[in-house]
Image (cartoon, rainbow, N blue to C red; front, side, top):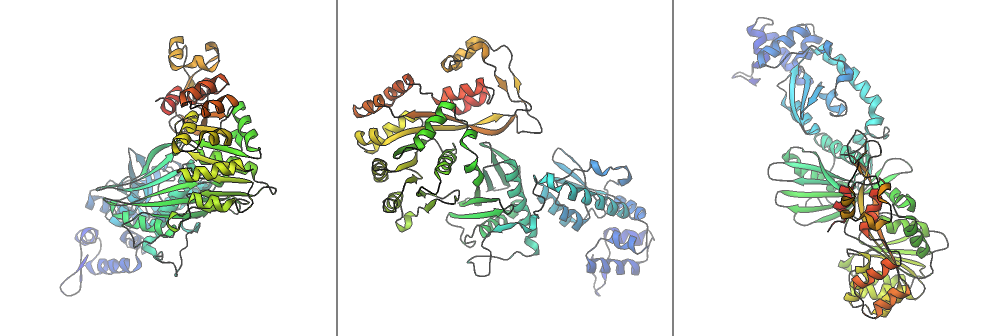
Length: 578
């Protein structure tokens, strides 16, 4: 409806139809339209509440005028409405009820199918195509009341027990204040963005995801979760929301929202209860079509789960615990990014974290805050490197030292000297196997005698997806030649006792998998291996000697988990096949 030449409203659409069908006179319709615009309500609501027309008359007229299907809500059961798809605040705000959801198409019951703001906001919230259908206002109002009451009752289940947390009022330590550089206030227009981001954070926690990816492209925007090591697309909001989403995430993590040319790092703390908080490590990356933002979810409870939950075989666990309690030496954990090295190290530190020990760590970045441990954030720009932090630690009367990563000869030398002078040192290296870690140190320039006398234990590890215990099914009658080809003869389990399971998929898991378990190589330094190192032995010779002493390779650890029904053969091949 636009003003005419003399300031009068030009009637179009439903108002014009009301006049042309002689249901109402032009003056009454004009006054009704003005009243609706002032009150921010639909014309159908105004006419019904003022007894100008019945709800059925308006619904019939609307459906005919705009060619939209007419639906009778009397035939709809509240339990059949899709729950958890649309933000309840949007349902109440726009008087729009989800009716059905099939093939990524959501049908919503409305009184005004021409309200594009309603359709766009719901499409953004759901990440699906939205199709309006016309219903009677009085029945819609009653149905929405029932639906919202049911949604409130189901909120606890929908958010995994987080029923006391409101999406628009989460306890987030975001540093938002008037004095923060680059901080912005959250006005009414940004409320959907705030709630959308908060919902994604909670959903990722509920799923047990490790990372959230916000990714802009030329014609679309997508959000992905990494769960059990696998990335999965969750939603695709409108591309025109990219800058607002990036700005919200940067404000939450105390970044400069005006700087879009260089990567930035930040952190967010989300308090779920008085006793539980989740940290998010945030990084932005300028890409061709905008800023990609990745959040790493850091749950402190992962460092307190206990070594029994990590997946070590009994002999491997015994070797790790025994070495941890030595007065001096070095434990090295190796593996690619995302293989669980940090959890293994933090689990060890948690075991050692007592009032009798002084523990210091140098990390880049500090991922999980642990009370009782002195954690140092490495900052190369100001000269605080791993090596400098280690030098300072040795003047701080340490018992246990953890170095996030040995990257160069200087750091390796200082760490080894610390291990030789009465300290327990834990660190990581990026190598493919435990035997290769020893030759990697030698190739860095560390003298062979120092390697042989300081390194006590090496753990190489990977993470594999666990089979869902609810739906996994066995393979029957696997031929022996297949078992031999896969290498099962090397794990000392009779072929008749091996039962291989396959993933199926159910409502309790993701494609037949739920959670992850560690696969480990645990190499103890023995006199024979020390002699090989000092005489110039290579990684193959070290591995051969270690196998004679009971060393189990990553492949053997994986096959043992397959034989025990913990992981699938497909997953073992994905993780350990070269």
